[in-house]
Image (cartoon, rainbow, N blue to C red; front, side, top):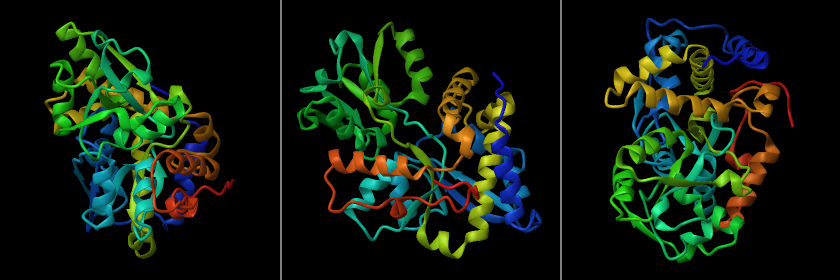
Amino acid sequence: MVRRIPKVFLAVFVASIFATGGLVSTASAEPVRFFFDWIPYGKHASFFAGVKYGIYKKYGLDVTLVPGKGSGLSVKTIGTKGADYGHADMGTLIIAKGNNPDLQVKEIAMIHHNNLFNIVFLKSSGIKHPKDLEGRKIGSSPTNSAKVVFPAMAGAVGFDPKKVTWVTMESSAQDPSLFAGRVDAIPSYRTRNPTVYKMAKKLNKPIGMFNYSDYGLDIYSNGIIAHGDTIKNKKNRTRRFVIASLEAFQWSVSNPKDAVTAFIEKNPSVSRDLARGHFEIGVDVAITPNTKKYGFGFMLRDKVQRTIDTMFKYKKMKSKPTPEDVYTNEFVNVTLAR
């Protein structure tokens, strides 16, 4: 499926290219490490396309893509300067900053403008409503952002998240543990639905899902993050990285087959059909009425505030961050303000 990119997307890129002073020489491309929020799958295809088809190189960047294991690890890695930029959930970042006000990490461009979190369970378990998760075992890696944000969903629905037993495991063990019956449910992302549905069909074990967004959680999800020192001292490089990433997304939406090819070349264990399905869902939650109006990557202050309020209400924190503690639109270079 090929989608038409709203004109405001293009305007953002043009304005931002102008702000960088034009393109830079690719002869001495600057090395950059980008730390993912998860083990790479189809939703990440645009970043692989940016590398393969020279979009990052056009902006003088030699980008290395690094697998992750949850937004919590991504935030920690950027907070300790273990990578130059990261991909992380805003709610997870807010909780980390609320418990450590000295953490110098911010969202600098939003990718998933609508949250993707869900809970996946076997229909044979008898689970029919989120409240049925009480007394159940849920398997997750410690830093999985859907786990981190789980108390907010529980609070919105009206059940006690403390009555859930969390079973700690590697992210790669979640799906097998669910289908083997070792846990009753797992936290996941809607972009992974094609993978889980395929496994369910193969094993003849029907699954059900609860999307957090269906229970009142209108909050931001994953975006690009950077350390405060990087934001302050590497402004030109940061702007080039953000704009190249947004351009790679734009290019990938218009060329999904080629974008998926770039991903598959580096991740051959994932089937093309699954990768394409992952990517399409990621695009669906990225192009929203607000992104059509303000531009892709741009964050609305009121939605950032709502994300903070939601996390603070349902997740214990030492202090409540302000929107300015959490994000900046400086590098998406949109003149509209709200």
